[in-house]
Length: 155
Image (cartoon, rainbow, N blue to C red; front, side, top):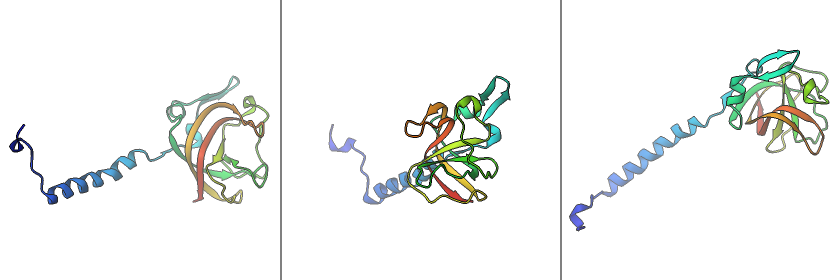
């Protein structure tokens, strides 16, 4: 190959190409935006045989999601998790097993410690969705649906 077979790019063209790539980055980040999930969209059916996950819930497994709801009173002040509920609750809705799991709560495991909110304040939680029965090894708390590596803010 001789030097004439190479494409010559000026500094201005190279900077333009770099700028074009930089303009495409926000569009790529938008693809990774969390999917919105509501309590009504979580289960396909609730019956005598228990809960069945909806197609939407199953499709969001291990993906970023955002949900709005209320923070149930935490088990203890220093907990790294709380329960997100569909409606404000005066008492914490902890369950003994996933067979008793209510269809309007999600356990939230925080990425970093945050100050808990009042039970009547609407919050939005963002994190990675996990679906399926799991027992927390530290507390023994059993959950069916979780949002992990999460953060929240008041809405």
